[in-house]
Length: 271
Image (cartoon, rainbow, N blue to C red):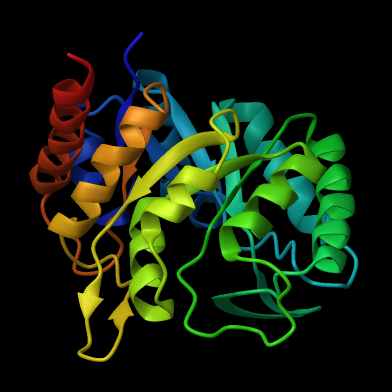
């Protein structure tokens, strides 16, 4: 069975998609917070999309890295959406996003150390038990490193997944961005991640700021990321792929073509 190739559901494309056109994508990724606690147009569009396509839910507010208690109000709203739309995957980010009651809406990295692994694994156990399903956590594009880290990013990501029983949403663009900014070989990252842990790929475009790369999601996937993706699909041939484009969002056709490019690369590797 071939993997699925999808794109993110964005408000700029609502008028087009609500006409229920024939598209060249297999599925849509839904930004959870854009549709949560709403019965208005975002919810109605999601109902239309879900009638025709599989969907996954991707959040930015789980804040799994925070030492404080989980946000039960958020989890109840998330569970309600899951029960209604039955996504094939629910994911969020391996990060913290602010202090309790004060979400700063930035995805901030954690120290890569064993004590943090244990804390996150414990919280993930609560989350997954409450939702009644396994989640996936995504690797970040990080612009700082902690002096308290005891392991590499890829070792940390793997340990969290192993300890918590969750899966990994492997963002290929973020791996490349971090490899340049923090000077490591991105193939070491991909080599280390176990084959059984990856549930989904993300592909996006970065911007070169001269002395660092910035994960802007505002342009097409760059050649260096496609090259890394070619390696990834050989190791994980059945993993679904998602094209992310969050800023300067183009016409829907552009996203379709990016998804088709990913499919072409997969076909060149697997026939």
